[in-house]
Length: 196
View (cartoon, rainbow, N blue to C red):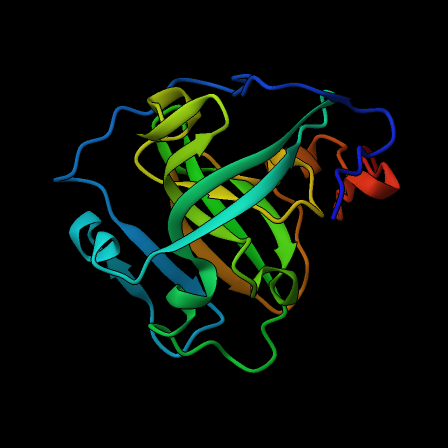
């Protein structure tokens, strides 16, 4: 399939760095990943436990609401569907919020998405990447190390929480960090859903 540039976007080979707040300083002793909300039982995973999970490599196109698009970046990480095997999600949970660190608050950043859209190999909690100009390397702290969510290309990249810290399963959709500030709840780049 050829590259399709969403409306209002330009293509770049770079991976620009944009984020709110401080760059999270990873501390393996205090870091964990939580799954909670509409589940039978909350689960908390250490960094070592996360890194023991089966890995997926996917090539995902990234589209940032600030108008850049980067095609053909490969990521290695843990697919969200692998994490679902560890937790019993209630049947009526149809949405998630994926959290990330923001200025020291482990749940300070969040992005909402429908769970159904995240069940493929292109919804990944990543730690390594490569592209035409770079060999495999860890994502940098500014890109969200140690774990960053990369959403499918059908979402703008603000849905990709940096310094990912957990998933809350929800019955009803609920605005995340940027959505509360007026950005689109659905955020489809191909429909140019930038703002509410």
